[in-house]
Length: 396
Ligand SMILES: Cc1ncc(COP(=O)(O)O)c(C=O)c1O
Image 1: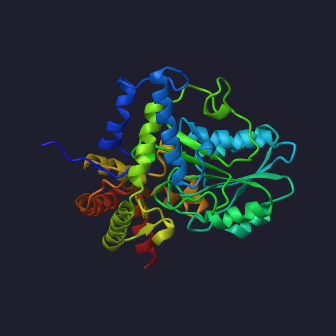
Image 2 (image 1 turned 90 degrees about the vertical axis):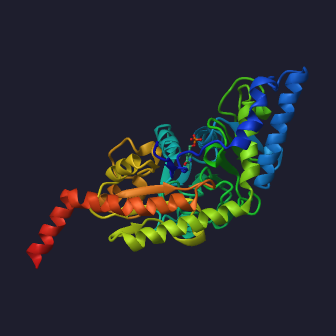
Image 3 (image 1 turned 30 degrees about the vertical axis):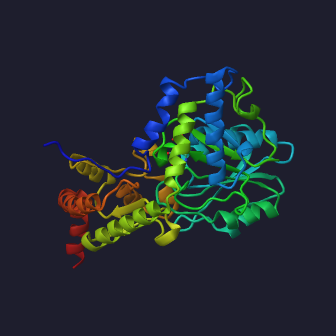
């Protein structure tokens, strides 16, 4: 019998659900028109595009005219940050972000520094939160943009957008947030939270890869970044990915069921308390309770390497990650975990498990059975354990 697969890497990407695939299929085979064409197939594509836009807009209390479809979170973040910077350069050249953003935000900011912009990278507290006071203190007369992650992809911290947005509004500075991990998992209301731009994507919520959106509040001064045809209100050129946006919108509709959040929260907390109870020297990274993404778990285990845990879990059919999928190929400790104050050893001993609404209790129980055995085995083999034992016996 082939080994069952237990997928706990939904923070990297999530499977496309059956209903979403079925919603998309007609747009590959029958309704394949170009939304710019004036014939029937073109008009049908345009209708699907606008229906999808309305679903995304309603989900964050925006108007459809404020939603620009993109190829995903990376493009939306690049577009928002670089384009706001260049469009508003006459007003100032200072941008504020944080040390724990996704790489596509950090590298966009680094590149802007090479173009003459000044960037402040804010510190976070030990749970990964950005303090509104720290943000306010960093704003200068030259600040044009603040870009702060909503839900942290590694440790699940949910920042208080309303408090941060209020400060940006008070100082007349644009506020952008990357909500790729939090979208549909916690409330987003662009008006209540004073958000000017928000990055959304589809593949973390069971929609297809390669599609996302940027909300741009009406009145925000921003030039297009990608030039070509007049697509997306002239804000993002390129033939629209109709099957993609249809799948994205269907994913948003299906994710609006709050029961999913409750179920993921229960399973998350069962897994967290089970691990902390059964594995000595295990530490949860990030916050607890409703300020943590309902599907995110991140531990550090003393005297073991996260990479090794991931490898052994993989042999048991359990998909996990150490740090974020994008940085896993480097051997550097995660910059997010070190920003939270973890030592290199703690950061290297980290493991991220991310659930989805398809995660079952049986899968959680399976991880709770296998993970303690793996940690025990690795600790027996670990030179770090031997070093710690040696120090302990020497000092006794
Ligand atoms: C917080 C965050 N922002 C941005 C991205 C990039 O999104 P995409 O994969 O759609 O380009 C990711 C995905 O890993 C993410 O977790």
